[in-house]
Length: 134
Image (cartoon, rainbow, N blue to C red; front, side, top):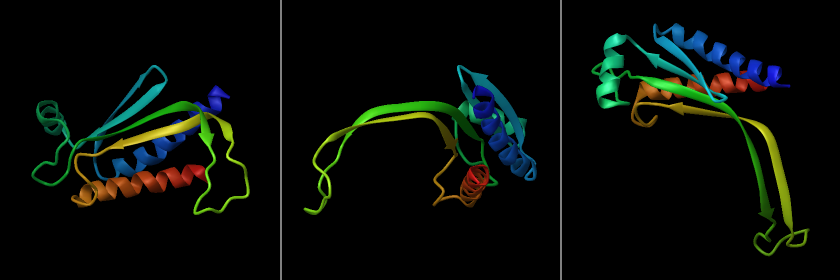
């Protein structure tokens, strides 16, 4: 099962990476403690700028961004409530155990509402997530 989970993450990374390489970005892959990351830069100057100032847009409105991926388990207790006085159940606690959930984080240099570049990267991210779900 670990092989399948790891491969699914890698398939997502490969799909996304293929799209990002089309816009001439460089990347760096890191793996630590069951978490994988892809960091993207336009050139070495962008990396130096990022190291000084962190996530931001350059003069061309492009910037450094990354994706983090890992598998998490969510175990908890939920309470069922009536909604607008309508229910077909009693107010019971239920135990929820969700194992091996893929957790992806996209970190962008600005809000997608403020930057066309960030909006485009976000769209690529979402589209590639949908591709691996099919």
